[in-house]
Image (cartoon, rainbow, N blue to C red):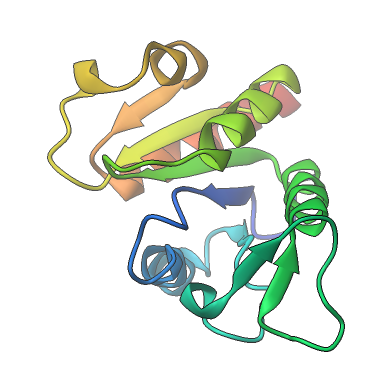
Length: 157
């Protein structure tokens, strides 16, 4: 779905393995590029810091606002992916279980995926699955977003 700003980009990347739950880079990208792009931030739905959330099986405990259900995470993330034109992965070399799933989900729906390497990881150290499914891999967020925007424009033509 293309917006008046141009491209809607889903912000994928590790959460559980990071001290800030992956919030800082997503907020920074939204701040720095929000005039040019619309972003789907899967962490924006929580009313407590991501690092304070506890994932539970099924659905959230209605009496405990620090819980989030696994079913809700996946369902909400899929909805945000479907509301997007493209996916930006904010990659760091850490365990990330959901991110590869999001990449595959997007790829199967012919959505372009760009991997922005945010640390000193060499491109050839990425998983072959990332190498195969990403249409762009770079250490520049600006280049990654530009590539996604171009691909969305070409695909829409």
